[in-house]
Length: 101
Image 1 (cartoon, rainbow, N blue to C red):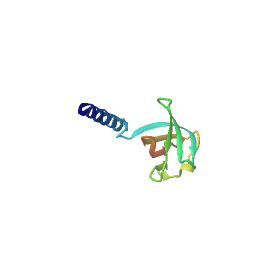
Image 2: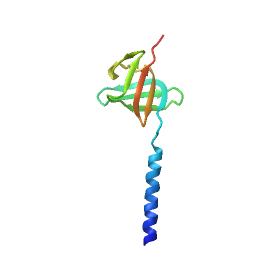
Image 3: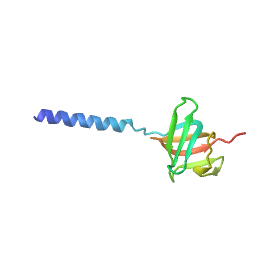
Image 4: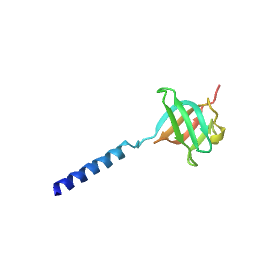
């Protein structure tokens, strides 16, 4: 019985370690096009240029949102805007709207 208990503890411990390892410790940067803005849910959906993957990102009061040197709000981002996003675990850390020339 003791061996079974030790084995169960080992399996549970490895599972917890694995789930912690899955969380990204380093922020990731993507460049893409805004496909949706939801100011009520506080989300921004971006289709990445390189991978074509679509990311739904949580935005909160700590997210830095800029266009050029000017801080803007989530509501000022428009579908089709080109953006560079720094994110971690689907949370936007910073969003920079790339100004059209």
